[in-house]
Length: 623
Image 1 (spheres, helix red, strand yellow):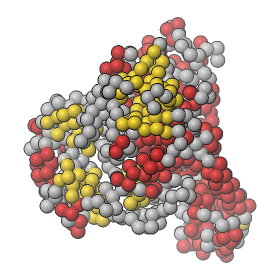
Image 2: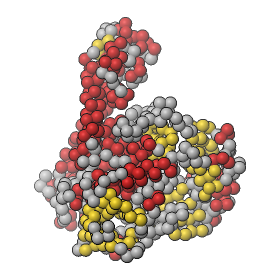
Image 3: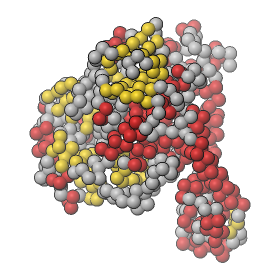
Image 4: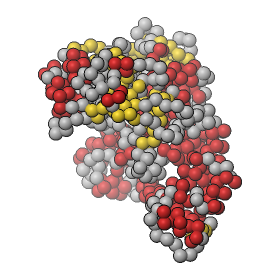
């Protein structure tokens, strides 16, 4: 094993590392996954859930490309919800509550069943770099493992420091030691590094809670699933979550510990995630609020361990305990473990190419929290892309990237590479200009052909996607050419308080009305007959409904994307000398020199580069 030459070595087995290893191995590369503890593969370090706003779209995209996150999310789910269902389909976001132990087990078993993939448990303390190219890794035991490419997915472990009140100690996660050596070596190689912070709430004993005092939060009545594959099934039974609230009394008890809080006494200097603040940060920033929501999330089917979502904290454990006991339903709470904050090293992602390969070291890739992101889904998508590109590089094939109008994954990576981040980056639907195109329901239509070309998505998956696409297109065409008479249409329109028709009209026109749904048009005899005759499933019916009702928005957004994508094809030569363009602003020249965009479109998205600077650049390039 130690004498073998690996095509791809993946360091770290969290969500990024697991997807990277699976992708590289499934593409035929001889791959090694090396991690400090093989018992903690794909560990859910924070909340036991996958998906959510924009994150659910990312999981669907990973699945469409042939990754594993969607499959594991389905097989380990204990509850399913489609969030934002009251809004337009661009905002619909799937989310599952997961069985934490089953999630990690299912991931490990999937990886163990993947050909070309080896495993090794140890800490990687250094990279082996020769003449600007990575050639392997060195472990803490001094073992050297040769590799043609390396993917670093170190999560929160690089010089990780855990804070609980006025105590702190080295660690990458509760009960696990930090990783050392790599940051210092990368800095010596010329990389810029920084520090970030994240936090996690206490875990409590569910047997000590009084759920009768809380608001039950059940899953959907007709749950869906993440994976487009039919090897997974929707849930037949689900576990409920619960909701309760903090109070002014709870806030006062928490404030008593502020002088011992590492957040407020200056011991933590790094930035945490803006959109997932700690409870002490919330009551400090939103002093006018007399309560905050807490979501009580079970950690599995059979365990009594519970995750207190909304109570992330690094306050002293006695303060945490005292305050939680004043929360309604928590009067007799027992701790499994207190909440804590963790500081860790990251590397500003402007030092990467769009493939996630570093600009400084050939064959070295970064994915996940090492790039300044937060969230399982953001990490997993980067791992998938890094694993794909590491494998393609070794096989001497063209690189693989996704544009902003093709996937949320494309938005995520372009944001990181082009804009960088100084606080943990989290994906939101608002970050995407083309969110009407990037819906959770059509991720397979957008990305399965690409996954198939890479060798990750099977031919069976491709044919299933093509069948869905063809069936939906034919159903939309049926609405366009089929008319409905007033005597059949008007009773439905009257029940929805919609304007009546005086003569036969095309179903497409009636179906396009904002308040008319698929359930309404199924009352037309011809529609139900078509569905039954063609054996259409819910996926196809939903896809056709979206295409009919949002056709104008989709066409407009696609047109805008096509216009802007023209600049994607205007390539900037490698090592372009921006210092020669004296008519461009100094800031623009500095930013362009540092980031080295590959296209004019990417250059236009860099903060500090104005439209005038782009015009000057185009003139200088002879365009």
